[in-house]
Structures are given as C-alpha cells and as structure tokens.
Image 1 (cartoon, rainbow, N blue to C red):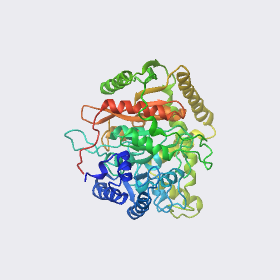
Image 2 (tube, one colour):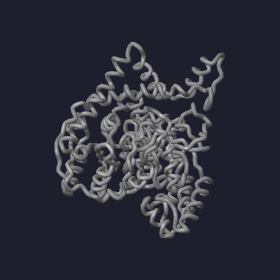
Image 3 (tube, one colour):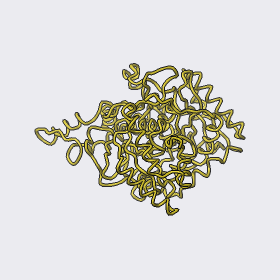
Image 4 (cartoon, one colour):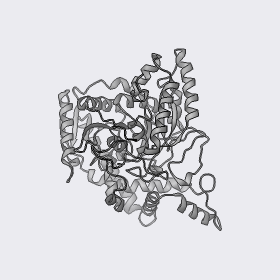
Length: 494
C-alpha cells in the first residue's frame, strides 16, 4: 500500500468511501508520521492520539454502514487558537498555561459534525502575532522545505506556521488556520501549500482566541485547491453566537474548483509593483497573468491608490484591538498566575511573565493609540484610511473586475533567527505588505503556490475576490495550480 499520508484529502476521502483502507489505518499513519517528524519540525504542541483513534473508529463504523459526513474519517490538525473542549488551547502563550476549555469552537464543531478526526493542536505565533512563527512560547516551527543543497532551517511563515508546516510535511490531511493580516496566506506561500482567508463573516469566530476582532477570520490550509475548498465547505456557515457571522448559504466550494476563468476580468493593481521587489516575484506575477489569459480571462490594469497606507493603518488597528482583547488575561480565573502583594501586583507580575516580547510590544502600541490624547490622531484616522482602502476595492469591482492577482509575499521563506529582521520589527511587519489590505477591506484572498525562486523555495500568488465570492477564487487558483504543474512537496530530511 502507498504511504497513506501522501494522499490528497480528496483522494483519502475517496479511498475511505471505496473501503480501500480504514480511517483507523489512515489516522494511525498520520500519528506515526507525527511521532517521527515533530521532534524536528515542532509543528504540533499537543498530539491527541487516543482521541484521534477513538474518532477514527467511530468514523469507520459509519463508513461501514454507508453513512458519514463530508469529511468522515479525515485526520486534521487544529491551530492552537481554536477552542477544543477538554484539550490544550493556549494560543501558544505562557499566560494560558494549562487551559483546557469547557467549550468547542464553532468551526471545529462543524468539522467534527462532518466526521473529521482531530490529530492534535498546531503551533503558532503567540496570540497569532507574528510573520515567522518565532514568537511561540513553544519555540519556532521549522519549515519542512529547505533550499536546494542547503541545510539551514527556514521559517514556515506566521502566524499559522504550524498549520502550514504540518500540511506540507504530510502530518495531517489539512489544517485549520486563522488570518488577521496574512496569517493563512503567507505561511501557505512559504510552504508550497494552498490557504484561503474567507470573507469576513463567512466562518464563525466563536470559540477562537481573539487577536483583532474586526480583522480575524478562520480558514483552511491544505495541499491542493480542491482540498482547501472541501475543508472550507465544512468550516463555513452562519453562527448566531457570533454577531459578525453572516447568514448566507454555504456553497459547495469544491464544485466551483474546475469552473475555469473564461470570461473573467482579472485586475492587476499598479500599486503592488513595489520598489525593490525581487525580479523572480515580478516574473512569477506576469507568468500567472499569462496562465489566466491562456484560459480565457481578460487582464486589466487597476489602481488601488490607498494601498501604501494599508500597512501603517493595519499596525494601528490590529494592536489597538489586541490591547482591548488581551486585557482579559490577568491570572485571576485561568491560566498562569504569579502571586503578588495585592491584586494589581498580581496582574502586573502575571502579564510580565505570561506574555512574550512581541505580544507585549503590540499591547503597548495598542494601548498608546487608544489613550485619551492619541485616540483621534491615530486610531480614528486609521479607521478612516481603512474605509478608503475598502472603497478602492469596491471601485475596482464596480468597474467590472472579477478578481485581483498579486504576489502573496515579497520574498520566499527566510532563515530562522534572521538577524536583520530580529533587530527591526518593522522589517518583519513588511512581510504582510501584500496581504493586510484584504483583511482591512474584509475581502476573501487565496494563496496558491505558483513557482520557485533560484534556491528552489516555493513562491505563491494571491487572488483577491469580491465579498462572499470565494468560488471565483477557487476556480482561478485551480487554473494557476494546474498551469504551474510543479511538485512543491519537501524532500524529507527529518
């Protein structure tokens, strides 16, 4: 039998239905792969082996009777930001030490409803704050992909680095992830996987640890466009427990994958052609447009004039919301508690010990921009800029554009502990330059691997769509995936 972990999610689903193998066998193969690889890759912070095998056994019983949901028996990894009842949920932070919630997030509930199996919780940047997965309390995740002929450890991107690395290294059939400013799309691009940030409101945020509530959105990372569409169909849906959840029917996203792009107009924003952009990324972008044109799409130059303000505005809005959201972590009811001489002292000592450096930095920025003398100068102004960014996209879509093609990241994966990036937080924040606009405008965006750089590292392209038109993104991404026709899987070294 071929290695079951190398099957795509769609192939595994078919194999289970055809009774070529059982979910118990498939789950066992993934658990064995995790046991061998995780000490090197650090993708999982908790492995739920017994629970996974129990869930797989239950799926096998359903499948034997010709029953089962859309993901029956499919083993998945869950980002440590999603609340999982009775299971480690710490947002990769010391301040949530030992926290096991008494509830299940809506997104994971939807997955279990459809028969998916939980392999464990995946590593991430602490509270989803980071672009490299180096801020986790549990240490950095290692990208399973290395430069050709090299043995240096590279970052898998962040914050969903554990999700992307686990998918790329065949340690789960797919994974949940979240995206606040690029945290699904950037790791997908760095690991040669596919990741979609759905429209804001498409997936429930209930039971997901909050970073920036007006920007956060859950979505899937998987190895193919079809796999990503299958996962998103299960993850999405209206949730009355989330006031920002939109009451719209969930389409069969997988049915749209092979729809093609004939007759579509693809926008190319001139503002994304940035100074100093590597030639190989510029070349890949042009190649992606050629692929779409060859399949019947029309390409149109567009302007998104407020793009240059997106990154600074994002790094005001997101920390401000983080400052507000993270105020609940005080050592009183759950998680870490460091005793002090009084309650105020306990708050201060607990937060000083519990939050990592990057989280503290963002809380301080956010608290500053929300303070009495600076609220209008920073936060209110950033929200006005956000409205203008949203209008730029609306104008483009009203002018007949169906989707927009851009690079996903300004570079391929970089080294862990990169000194220049470690010394300059702003340089690290620039990794989000192509992705934050999508969150600021609440739009859907998908990253799909499209080529490799000179060192053989994956490079991704990003497609941005109209609100709640993820189907067009899946169709266009599939055209790029098919045209690229490249194997992005890592050569195992672990």
